[in-house]
Amino acid sequence: MANKPAALQQGDTIGIVTLGSPLDPAVINTRADYLRSLGFNVIFGENVYAQDGFLAGSAEDRAADLMRMFNDDSVKMILPSRGGVGVAGILPFLDFDVIKQNPKILTGYSDITVLQNVLYQYADLLSFQSLLLIDFRPTTPDYNFNQFYSAVSAPIPSKPLTNPPEDPLISLVPGNVTGELIGGNITSFVDTLGTDYEIDTSGKILVLEETHEPINTVYRYLSHLKEAGAFEQVAGIIMGECTNCEEAYGVSYDGLIESFIVPLGKPLITNLKTAHGFYKAAVPIGANVNLDANNSTITILEPTVS
Image 1 (cartoon, helix red, strand yellow):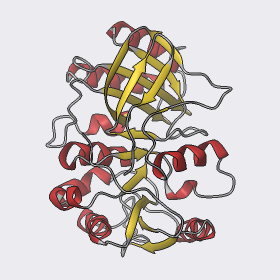
Image 2: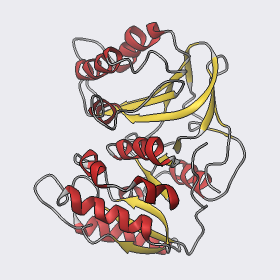
Image 3: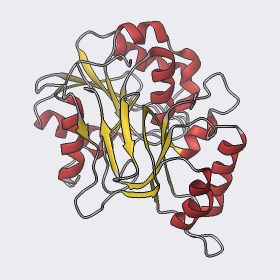
Image 4: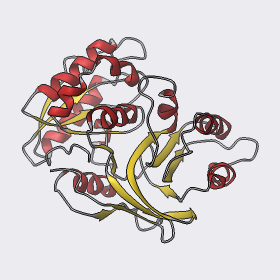
């Protein structure tokens, strides 16, 4: 069973870190001010504004910021400013024993899902493929905030993972399975293959999404996962959106799912609104969930915070 962080309450402290690519300091400050307006205290990692080309400083420094947040008893939630390349580089510098002993809410998407899956696998930490710091602004849809706060603010025993009402989940391969939920960004997931941090998919329900990749490139990534055995023992599959992904040779993302994912024969639900899309479901990485592809429902079977 996953190690669950304590629930987030108004007045709690949120620690802001930049773990991959840099973000404009003005954006960081504006979003932090919005968090304060919601009633939270905010502290910054020492390297939150750092920039070294396409990285926010060295991997050691970024990892040190994250570890300081896990070691700080005043911090209830760790909020990455953004994703971007470089997140995987911090993994060798993390102390998984310390993280396991100090569970905190960690939320994010894109390359942050590399970190989230590794923390589940090595520190038993349940985390959330949900909002980043960049999403804390008045123009973010209410659905996104409702999903986020519902996931992190109270220990609800069981609840459905749903899309906005106008965008139903779609079942393409029938079946009813239960398992721990893992996954996230396809590119980031592929990057773990053949490393010490490769994610074990056996018996898991795998959720995948992508952004800004042509469909033939997405096919390449999915083929790599298949050849590496990532789909062999999965219990079921949830396909999120491919945001701003261009068709290739007349093949769309939906077409790729039909031709590549459906033949895998695993219970399959598609169209989950999450991560890079306009709407962002709060997906609990490490939680026990039921995927009912006979009735197009996804149910979180346990509290996601304590």
